[in-house]
Image 1 (cartoon, rainbow, N blue to C red):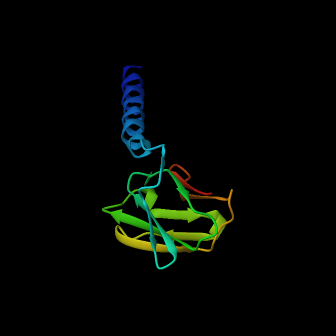
Image 2 (tube, helix red, strand yellow):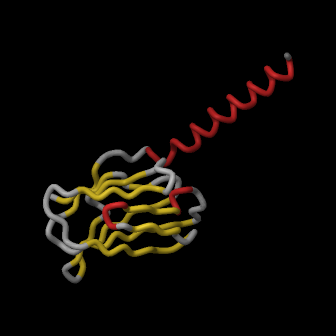
Length: 128
């Protein structure tokens, strides 16, 4: 009985610790425009991938060719496995570097969601 109690206690402590550690990547929930640059008639949206994706929400311009630039720096968690269903995109990102994803011009009101392959971490790009 005592060994069972100790095993349950250790399991619960590990689960709580894991929840605290993994919640760190989900802090940025507000929309951001600071991660968008216009270059050569395309908007380049930078998303950082490590312990989740930041920023989580980006408001971009509609009717403009777009490139999503995913930056990884020592990324070894599930955010390195990127899925963007609307673009039929699935790729394992390098641990460090830049990955470019071309996005055709989107109509106003369109939203594109990117997520890790487990669905734990995500980001949204809203086109207005």
